[in-house]
Image (cartoon, rainbow, N blue to C red; front, side):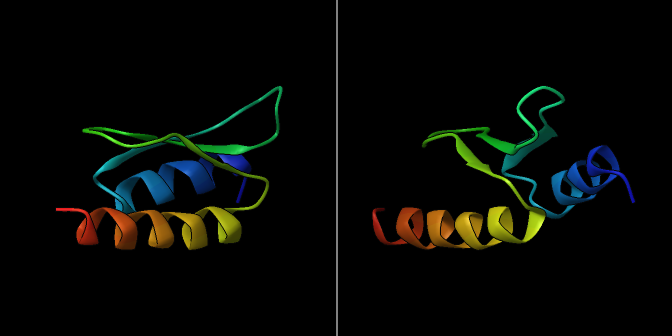
Length: 62
């Protein structure tokens, strides 16, 4: 699976985020659709871990 295909799969799994793969940066980038901060990681695994942390933080802040 290419990084772009992986990003598309992650984008389907995380509906609150727009997830892309940076061709030049070689990072997975997650942009929040409603509020919050941009999340970036070098691997899909790390991005999923960070998105889990970001979701947990946003759930407790409301």
